[in-house]
Length: 319
Image (cartoon, rainbow, N blue to C red; front, top):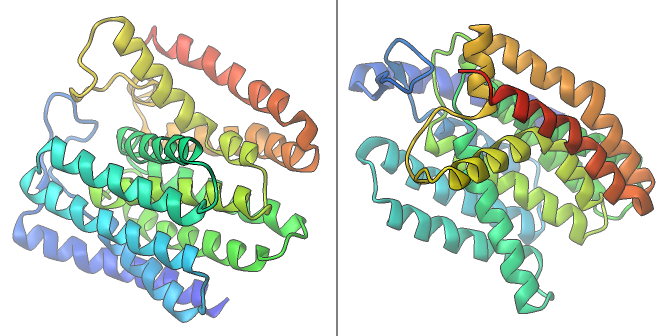
């Protein structure tokens, strides 16, 4: 409990200090025609999230190598994210680093699986790393999703009896409170953005927790697919829609469902609260059922995604 409180305090404080420094050094995300914000806003606050998480991990050790390795890889991505936020690193270099870290994470967490399965896991991590960056497009949404998923996973692990669940619960909660400290500054209207320094490593950590929970028999992989269903559905549907319409997938855009809905409602806060409601009232109960009744996990995953896919289609009609 002490480590959680300290992690929350460190995250909140570091984000505030970074905010002052960013204004002084003019490390600002200036709005353009695609932006969901209207004023120059400091970015790169995700570095504070990772530093706070590191403090929490240090205070609550000792840890298994899987957790330590996951944290180190996330910090490497945070540094790359800061450099990209500052100097716009080539996409080839960034994707190379992302792919290498994804492969290392898959190998670290699943050392005994056959090579084809390892490559599939690495590709899944790489997709999660990128999609989390895609989905960090309005105030509060990326941190809110991470907090909801981590708290949901911790609750499901607590309800189980698998060995090692205590460390898993603590790590999930450490990540959640590190994001919560940042969310204090990022809640609409945001005073600070996480940038690539936060969204990319957050995607890696969430996918790592999903693989680790499954590999150690702590919670079903289907639970994570359900808990992250909003982000997975929106990002994947939008990518496929753009491919079908011949649009370049590497080009920045503002066509995600959450962006369309925020423009329709003229509110970032309303979209964040909608995300909370969907998770609390729909996805978390289904994830609980999938963990309790794994023989029905596939059906429950389909059940979780169908209304979201319908919502994506409806949102596609918004400007």
